[in-house]
Image 1 (cartoon, rainbow, N blue to C red):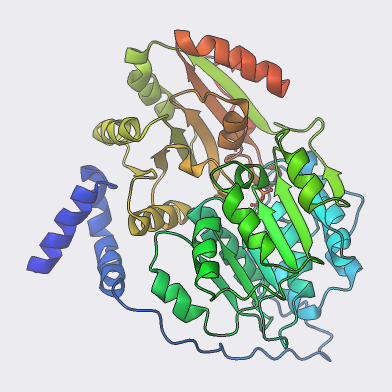
Image 2: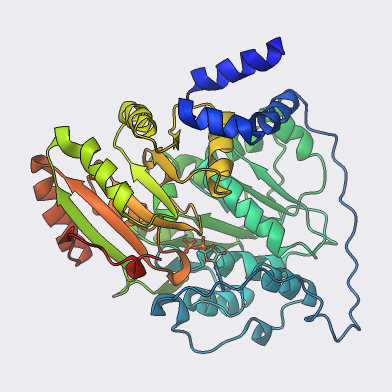
Length: 460
Ligand code: ADP
């Protein structure tokens, strides 16, 4: 009992739930789940064991009928995911086991970026692929690379680098789902977790390793990453990985891989500085660009001109009015995230919050909780702008307006995933006016004032 109380207080101090939510959550047995989690957190990684082998009956012609398919998503989809040349996943001689994973994940037809990238990667090309947020870039590299990994070869064949821990976890989850019927060992390794645990895990055979550059560089220095035979390398959210914060670690890891590597860069935005990197590491790469005119299709963008002191009041009015499935509210600083989430909760809207100064275990719990729809509102800093894929998220609110068009694009791209419709509302203060104009010009888009009524069909 005492321990229980202590833990509850600990959660409050940790501060990622707010009081009201605490009570609701407790009733639903949430703490019990968290307590279990807490009991596990001091366990060391188990000594490496191989998972039970999956055996597929290759003579079973009825295999498609036996798949466990998810419920069909009947929402309207924009042309940036439907406008394909008509390819099917079965056109590329993918293994039956991989096709089963693809269909069970709910992918029926490839999206445009998948249609272009999958055959190129299968043919061995290095790639620089640019496509809108939420149009299936993860599948575009995961599917052909998983096809190319050989479960009978006992070394690491694929390395996937991502800029944030949450994104690495999300990507490893997609890899695990796609490879459900393949006998591949996939390991995720990120900062914020125990290094020794990762070292133990990497003693086993690992076919695919997914992680953040800093942690993987540490493991490489310790000699536990075996990259000498790793020929498939992906930089997802590549523009971020090419910034000075990450580039040295990325290049260090690339140097550990063989010269005949196949290197694939995926992102929605590529900065001018990519040219130098491309010359060094990707001289003959194929370029796929699906971003010429479709950048913000499917996302209705509005702004509300407000005074700083009116923001909370406006937010309250807005969230009462909108038909929100799930919503992310962005602030520009850690302090503002904490303050705002407290205020919103007091106004009767329980919410989660997340930022980079929280411990990794808290971050993971909030991330998983929000993903599994335990809470409708998430207040956060830009930690969540990149790649995070939450299907039911239909509204993004920039409580604080971002400074750059890149950040704006990535933030609002959290809604409207895979051609679904989304809504973004931006609070603009006097100082933000110039920035709004700049972003509109740079993205060649127009953000309209919030009307008295927003048609819910535009974002549901
Ligand atoms: P991106 O990396 O371009 O931001 P993701 O790879 O995260 O996009 O995909 C966005 C969403 O679309 C995910 O929920 C994913 O499951 C879904 N998705 C991807 N490819 C397909 C497909 N071919 N058919 C249906 N859904 C897909």
